Amino acid sequence: MPKRHKFSIRARLTFIFVLAVAAILSVTGVSLVHLVHHSLVSDADNEIQSQMIRTQEIFANAKSVHNYRVILAVHGDVVIQVTNLAGTKVWAASSAISKAPVLARTGDTPGGARLALKMVGTSRDKDTLSLISSGQIGTIATRRGPGLIFGFLYGEGIDHNVDVLMASLVVSFPLLLLITGGLIWIGMGLALAPVESIRRRVDTIAATDLSQRVPPTGGKDEIARMARTVNAMLDRLEASSQFEQEFVSNASHELRSPLTTLLATTERAAKDPDRADWNEVGEVVMREGRRLETLIDDLAWLARHDEHRAEIQSVDVDLDDLLLEEGHRVRLLSELCVDTTMVRPTRVTGDPAMLKRMIRNVVDNAARYATEELRFDSHYEGAEAVVTVADDGEGIDVGQSDRFFERFVRADPARARHSGGTGLGLAIVAEIVERHGGSSCFVATDVGTKIELRVVRDRRASSGSTRRST
Image 1 (cartoon, rainbow, N blue to C red):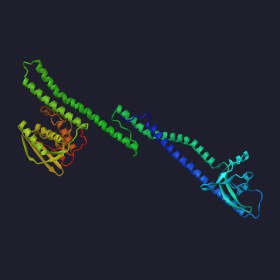
Image 2: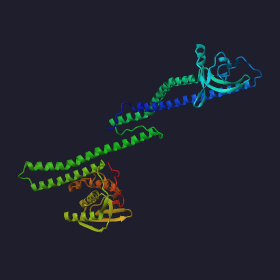
Image 3: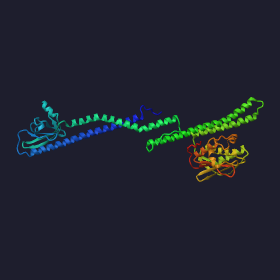
């Protein structure tokens, strides 16, 4: 059972796209934060290194010994502090931290020397420590002897900048998702509007008139192709509806005729049973009963074929044997002469039951109109097997003979009804021949009529397109 969705396609697609955009924005945001943090750290390290080198050059070029704390200018966001090797006395410091005590010291770790901030107890020092970060340590040569140089990033620091960026992203991402969702919702509505228009149009057509069509949109996009496909489907539905109406009407008419004859005959005999010719009544009942049986059988076969439920077997079938069997049957049931001298071995691949029905329908049709003789022929012509059945009866107009393969069409309605024809025999022949990759037609002949059937001899039977005539 197909899964039922609570929400429309528009809503589902919008939700999916918003989720996709959210995932993309999340990955982008994390990548951006990482990239910015790495860039800030790299820039800070480079700037600190540059200022430390500059300070070392200043002290290297100093010509006198300064026993007091030297005040250094602040360049950018970097501050410098120079101490003795013991880390107990400040020799120089940038103006921003000129009054601060020693802020850092060296410490031994398994990996070597590291920079560690020295915690001080006064509130003034705590404020200074809160403003420095990303410290680096190095050695420096001065006139007072070797010392340590510390470089710090001064101000709000990298972490603060990253936090601001993250806060901005957290605030902007929902807004971006909201705007994106709205745009996607509007875009989906515009994209699906032609589909909804076609749906409403088809709904109206299905409820009112199948002869109407969906207006073509032009172009070659999906909507245009769908409109053409829907119109093609409506063409088939209209043809199928008309065919069904005609089929039901014709079938009702054909069934009514023998039933009327049966009822009239039996009612007339029942009113005066002493004077009724019961032999004649029996003959009428048997004849019309057989006609009903044949008609119902033909209708059932066509119904199965139209619904594509008739399965085709694929085995070797000797058409010459079927012709010879039918010739023998006609000789037993009638006084007709059957000429089978032109029947040659003709084997094809197909459904034996269908091919037997095809041969029998053609032979019965010819026998119904024959005067004295039937002539059978079977042979190969290239990749096709050809079967012809001819009679010496009244000829037909070959140019107008295609209609005889339509359903409920007879050459002589009164004569065919009297002789038991249903008007479906040749229609069934046309269906079977077409499903076996062949064709059927009447061909010109000097005397009587001749029908020719062509079947592909080596083609595996497959479901062909249904041949329908109105």
